[in-house]
Length: 185
Image (cartoon, rainbow, N blue to C red; front, side, top):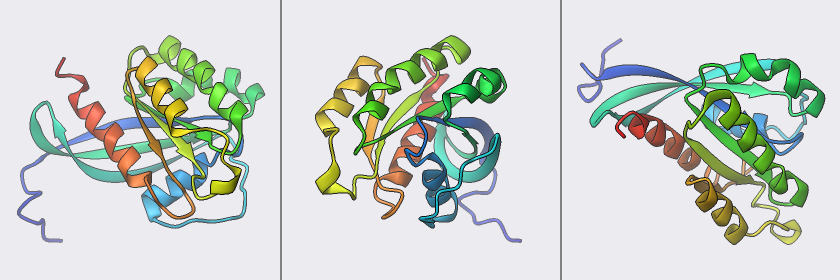
């Protein structure tokens, strides 16, 4: 396999990325959309965890690099949180916190997820993602609310749709960039 000139000699780094959020907010669909660019309408209850990989270009410590995002998917059920939490978050470099724009409770629950992340892995970059923006007529979470949540936790926020693909790559790329700059501070 020939390496393209742009990639030759670039630093190659790896980052563990976790998605958090309540049941059925679309974490698995978002990962599938990001990694394979496809959407599957059937709901698959994720058993335990699954790890998928996608490589993106980032600035790493000020220089261009290739970042392997190792994306972890976990069950959202509250009972599983305590069991899997430590192993799931351990060594995590960044988190995408997902809510369902059509379910207000999933938005309020983001605060609990953030607290848990901070307790487990400290001040890693977080990106807030409001999923299912394609269901316009059912939306109960506004972009203003998501933006405010982002401001409170100094994180960026995105409206996205795993179904249409809108905003998905942007959210993951924003997290990759934040991870790349995280060590610069």
